[in-house]
Image 1: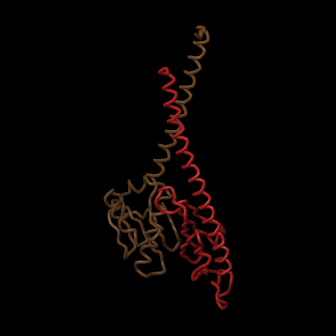
Image 2: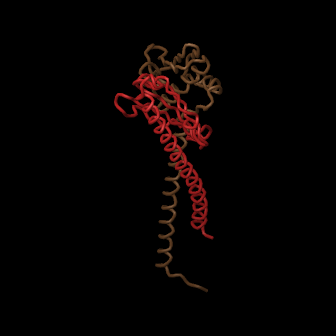
Image 3: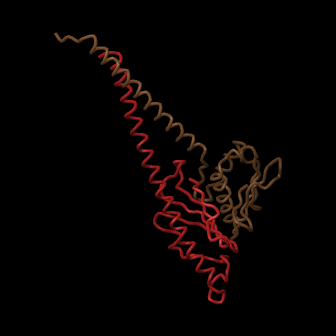
Length: 130
Length: 136
């Protein structure tokens, strides 16, 4: 076998290894992305519940125009794959959501932080933390 | 015995050279992706979901020089501005929110009040307050 052919064999082995490893990382990355979308979807469900709460008068157990005091049922914040923690102000609500797949750091689960503003009706912050 | 014409041998040689160059290019591309992937990982903050596991992480930040002091009772983090500003917004948001939850849990408080202050400038670099999350 000539020297050039030997070089080709070595390079092919190296590139096949590299491709397999990169493929594994890419599939992992797609899984993480899907999980982040799931967390964000759950946060959107919670925003809907929070808006219903804020829209109801205080006399009926609602927030009377404020998110303060909003406590969702456990089923919405703790599913089989997702955990969402939250804190509220008068016209904002902040969520910290975790998935089950390992995130970018390879040790802790994917995490998303989102803050919803009542005045604008939009999220002022959506950050993929991990 | 098989004979190879000089023209054919040259053609084969050129073909192999192109193949080697192409393989090298693929190799360089692959290594670039790995380097990019690695940089993305090491630049990302690793925060445990369980707030009770946050103490060793804060200790590590102190050793790295990012954190000067952390007062969990008053929800105050004093940081080195230069190191803080070198982090991306996602990391800053992650640190503020996680430490805010940690302090709330530790102080048995429903409020996630928390502030990040610069060591030398004493400016507020980020906070969880009346307006919610604010990151400078």
